[in-house]
Amino acid sequence: MTYRAPTDFSFIYNPQGTISFFSRILSDVTQEKTFGEKIYFDISQIETLTTDALMYLIAIVTNLKRHVMNQYQIYGNRPRASSPRSLFETSGFYRYVEHPQEKDIIPVCENVQILSGEDADPKSAKKLVDFVLEKGQLEKKQCKFLYNMMMELMSNTKNHAYNNRKRVLYPHWYCFADYQRENEMVSFTFMDTGDGIPATVKKRIYEQAGDLFKLNKDSYYVISALKGEQRTETGKGYHGKGLPQVWEACHNGKICGMRIVANRADIEIFGEDLRKQDLEEPLKGTLFYWQIDMVKLKEAV
Image (tube, rainbow, N blue to C red; front, top):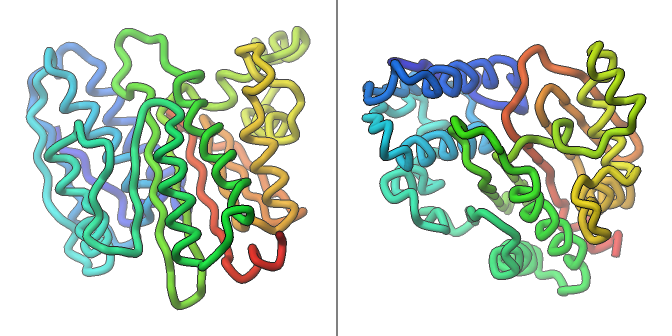
């Protein structure tokens, strides 16, 4: 089975094409007739690559390697274009997929921090915060919101876990932080391979009825959760606070350019402005992409 990545391999710039690529893989590998086959990832034609697609590819490869009973043989090539090839190499991607049990993906570049895990991990959250503090020469109080936000996003991975026995993507989170010295920005990509926000939020009776007739869009539920409208399914007061914290941080200028892709929902937040659309195919999981402007963060706190 050969899977050719799209030229624009990015949920940010080409969400539908990138989701279609991964959907085909996930559909095929859940079929018993494919167990034991060779899987070849052709990424040679990639011209545009962003970290979100890279994180999801890591999730796919590492999960397939853990399917011992299915015994897939996984192969692949490298991008021909220098920019995407460099990102694959400096991110530590090849080193990580060879040893998928490693908790931390070890990047080659000092301006990149990549972590992964299965539940909320204070040490991992602290590493990500310390990365920002070090690069931006900030005080701890200026990044307290980031620590709280990361802890909640990590915990959602378990809360939003798959129940399907044939699952390919086990509940896991991956976080990629990239520091751009030239413009004093840190870009974050956080990937949660749980069920996704629209599938797991608590729904009211009239909304359940609307879902039967496909009247409610996934973006409706994501925006409702962002606004903190008591959407947690766990019933525990400390859950369900991560998305409202994201919403607040966007509005007070601590983070900028937030992009959330969850199931069919595609949301962008720029300060007070919000753009939404619903995709043709769903993403299995939830993607968060945002930036922290070091200069603006100092001013916002």
